[in-house]
Length: 261
Image 1 (tube, rainbow, N blue to C red):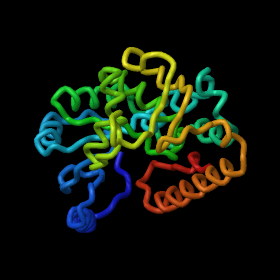
Image 2 (image 1 turned 30 degrees about the horizontal axis):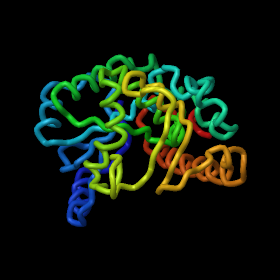
Image 3 (image 1 turned 45 degrees about the vertical axis):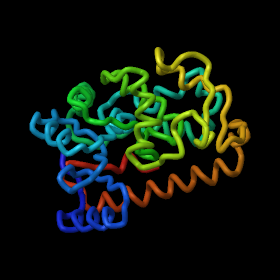
């Protein structure tokens, strides 16, 4: 399915400007000189394109969490009753996770094809990064990353590789040398979980303690407070602006109105 996007001269100019300023260029076009490619398609990736991605050294963020919503999979709703997450998902977050896509004519795409695309990329050595594209429908910042890690494992990554895709690997790709590993001199941004997520990726959800910059935080303080509502209202507004703009340029047969918060 074709969706609206930038014309090629504009895309090339933006990518060139980003590189000139020493920025990591992230886009949807592998031949624009990007360092990170966002999303995998719902159609099978051709072998020659996979080879080109690998040859160029481009990393790929599949964004499986929002894509599974498009494909008619459980999506964000699969997190609503998770015993480790449910107590910390207040009303606003549950609203986001409950959005169902709809709007596409015909049968939804096959999510199995999407997972197979990720498996093929990983098999030839393409760097795979975790990422949720939140606040797209059915996703939220934080909880949806746990779902994304689960889906990366379903696509064939080991739990340890899935963890690295959300920590040390993106830190290297984005030039964040002060974080992602545990040793002297690194930022003390840490999670303590119950269980071993290198054998069961779902244990990333069993968080018992959190530190940011070496300071321990109580994540329950945020739940239900005015700061939470302010943040979620801002995310709703941001998504509505993006959706309104997209709807001005949609191809025939596509209606995203059902995604509107």
